[in-house]
Length: 226
Image (cartoon, rainbow, N blue to C red):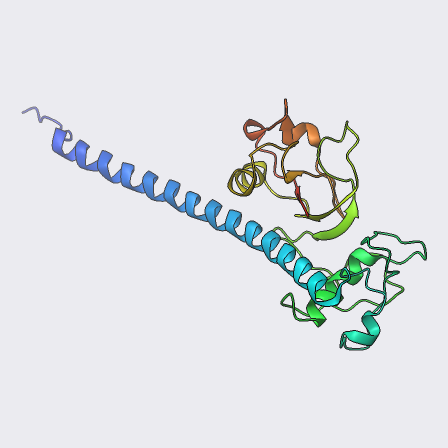
């Protein structure tokens, strides 16, 4: 006697498809939530540093890192390194000091940023004890320079806040869309190849003056102009 093999009914197949759809939807929604959280984290860090910069300037009539009377007027543990007071947060001032590193000591000791960073006048490189990091474990930077925008063009030196490197291009592009014009070479938030480790490759992060989303590059960065 022949036995007929029993297959799935249309209802069973439909139920399986619904379950698969729900699982895929959950995964995609989870990825979307993670992306959104990372974007908000980067924006919050950038906006917090900018607010601290202007708050410090308003209180002391000087710039963090560049403040020449920091050791007198700010209570830093072990003493505050002084800048040269020339109105710029230089990455190497005339005396060879790194004011862009001093800035974090000044801002945290003065209460404008959370954390506790300590630098002395001899420090030359960012470290975990003197400089904050972005969500991708790369050092951020507050400095007066022209390391932003189109690397093939000449940008004027300005004070800016660097996100640091190793930021996926889709994240940096979404940050740009939310706080600026969504373009890497215009507005107040621009592409930057600043890094203390592996510098972002502009050709992998930007294509024809737009963020190169299709490339899915994981090492990009940006800068907010002040």
